[in-house]
View 1 (tube, rainbow, N blue to C red):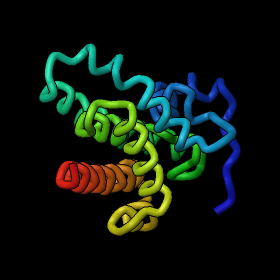
View 2 (spheres, helix red, strand yellow):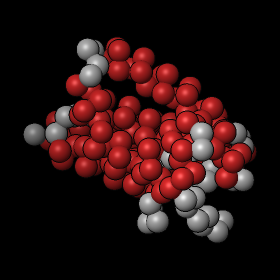
View 3 (cartoon, rainbow, N blue to C red):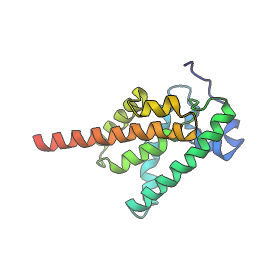
Length: 167
């Protein structure tokens, strides 16, 4: 698929869904917008966690952010004429916040989480590829990255278990 050009900055302010779906502007990056959106999630994670009184509240926030994302991505994809336009990065942001919630809270583990998430988001193993290729809606856009997050969490858990058993 050909790379779609990023919409102009003013596009973000045409509808609140555009601002959200485009990751508050991080999706407008001309280079690797999905990676930029994931980096936005990483940079904002600590600040966001400071506002949440517990992991359960943060989990509830992530659920609401996912549901909001389904609608925001649907509206924005329709406006851009491409269901999963490259500028839409909310689908990277919300699942990666979830990965960071479950990952060990060190810089090294967060970097490994970042790289692993990007890997699974790019290669889209089943069932992520199903959602990406067959479910042409905001739900499909959000779900393929949720699947990548699931693979990431499992890979990190296996890695941590192996490291713990060796040392």
